[in-house]
Image (cartoon, rainbow, N blue to C red):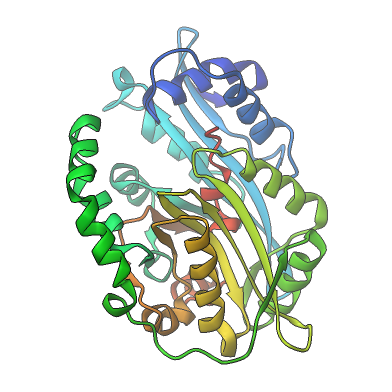
Length: 362
């Protein structure tokens, strides 16, 4: 069988495959990407020797890769193992054969309590469905919030253009965008927010762990974090300069108590990707407004994220719109109660807790 366990000596071939056919790029593979892959799959707190990643090899050539990491989560007090799928790539000359089904089958046969992916594209989604995975509607609601509507609309219209055509289009429409963005408060209206003042601070590791402990109490399934895992994860995420600068902000109310927090990637003149935004339900609209203002100050033109199912009305009230086209979340388990929890939005999960944040791009 050409599917076997991924070992450390495979890293150069796998990274070359990822670089050419998953991104894709040309030229030499950056040394930082080799280091990032090695750290992700062989030197981190998510390692589980009983749940390896897999390669598809023919005559010494690696033609496919399926990355697997393991998270531990709490299910009503019981610690369970979640197998996260990521970086699923097959060489073009091996597509249409047994490479993709073989790799996916090896993953599906693992001994995790729950298998999960949160970044499937349309092609891989179809493959996952063939081995019993289900799309989770409650975890596939993505939100977008324009902060500079004119430039954001321009960005959307120019995505299919060449770089020269896009530059000319932006230059020609810049005056109109300036007018539109100056009137953005009239174009996108936010609902009323609590008048409680929120005070921002750098989000420390200790505070974030305290926030997790407070916030997961109303959920049946939540991630199990400790300081070592969380520190490694945040440091790994900071390497992804392609997404921007990772901002971590804690919020306190007027009495000095934790009110909420948010983590997002900020890029001036580009779209910011929200990793996690959480906090007290009665202050959630104010937390969103604080996030939007912080992003404006960073020059971000819009924010994208995954909507928490319970907070849909709050996102809507604060001028967000929704789509299901942001990377599919699918799950598989021999324990139907776990799938039921995901389906009804009773899991405290975000982009921080899945495969999305483990993108090794540098």
